[in-house]
Image: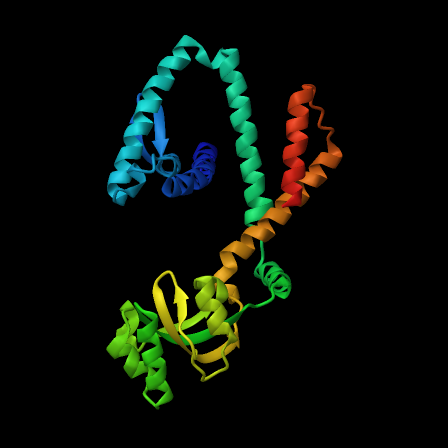
Length: 286
């Protein structure tokens, strides 16, 4: 092989080696449109899709992408004209870009050190801490028969005293929509029912019914208590999103506190400083 052919072969290999990563990048993030000399790549379109108006975000995927592409093309067209006019050198524009850059850096840092940093172990540990603080409320399982008058309720109590079945009497005489279920109310805590009803129900012993009618805004009740228990706490799976938010909040607060130790925050406007300090105190109290 001649010297020139060898150099040509080496150059070709080098050229192919240099293009390989670019080709791989192009395959992962291809150009999907051109506006003059400006290119729109797939990743740019994906970002535009996430920034669509909420109404457009409800569209099918192909329509969302078309809407986002349409918006991107409009942006590229006018951005080119703005560049020709030198608007990128406008001081107000520079300040806005600086603010948007800071905000996006904040968001990227937040995602890396807060959102993506949360572990399953941290969530489970925080769940255990929060559950330990909770005193599970008592709840009861009851049936009731609702009638319009006190005399009707007293007559039903007499029938129960005579051995009549509560569920059957509820199906026959109750005016409540749940009469078909024999007046079954399932389990409930005190707060779920009107005070008069809850007070009477929670005083009963298991298997007993009220010996006098219970009056409420709905009419007169006869109540049978079937069970009492302590309400089971929610499982981790049921409250995991809320617990994760607590863990994320703590991580974010810790990041801010560390950052504030490294930088002095000086607010020159007295009124604004007071408002800022008050807002931070309120946040810390929560």
